[in-house]
Amino acid sequence: MDREKENTKQKIKDAAIELFSKKGYDGTGMRSIAKKAGIAVSVLYYYFPNKENMYDNIVINFFDEIITGTKSFIENNSNKNLKSLILKLLYLFNDLSDKKKNILKIAIYEIQGFGKKNILR
Image 1 (cartoon, one colour):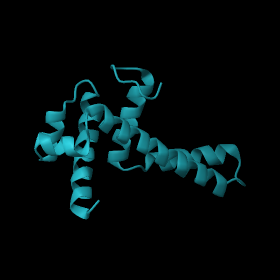
Image 2 (image 1 turned 30 degrees about the vertical axis):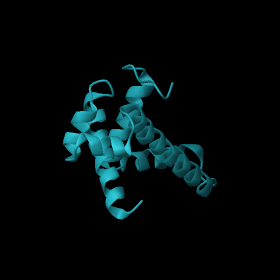
Image 3 (image 1 turned 180 degrees about the vertical axis):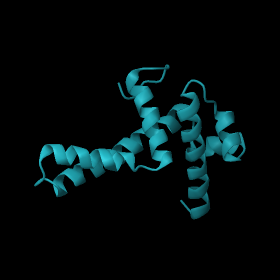
Image 4 (image 1 turned 60 degrees about the vertical axis):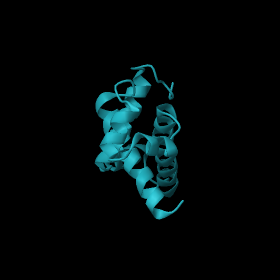
C-alpha cells in the first residue's frame, strides 16, 4: 500500500478509535467515522468492508501489539522480582499515548460485555 493510502487508512482508524471510545460500538456509525476522518463514506468502505471489520482490526491489532510488547518486556526483565515487574508494566501502561489509552478503553468496554459487539469474550 502506498503512503497516501496508508495515511488515509490511519486517518480512518484514528477517527474510529476516538468515536468508539466515546460512543461505543453501537453508538458509532460508518457515516460518523467518515465525517470525522474527513472522507467520503465510499472511501471508508474501500478500506473496511463494514464497521465490524474495522472494529475487530483496531482491537485485535492493539492486543497483538500489547501481548508482544509485554512478552518481550517480561523476557528482558526475567531477573526482576514479580512485584517490581508488575510495577514497571503498570508504569508502561500509564505512559501509553492517548490514542492507545482510547483503544484500551474500547477493549475494557468489550471485556465488561457492554453493547452487542463482544469480540473479546
